[in-house]
Length: 75
Image (cartoon, rainbow, N blue to C red; front, side, top):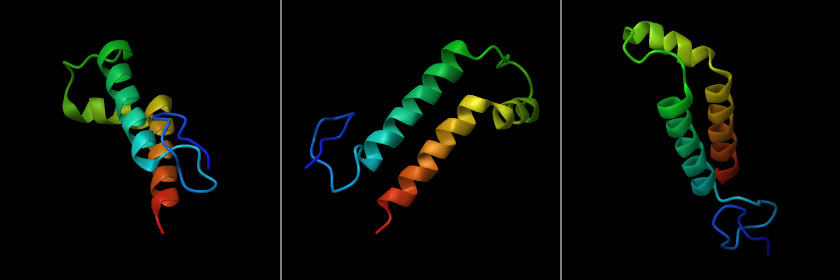
């Protein structure tokens, strides 16, 4: 049986990462990037921030990872 690449515990057949582990890493990555590395000013209005985040390539990748995790976790 393979082990999770994130937590090291055994995972079911065919998977190399637990769903919960992948979502946790995606959330941590988003928090770190948005909080420390994003250059878009947080002082702007909510609509402008939402538009910026919607076009952010990193957040699109994080969201894709979450979607893949949900599909893999479904029975």
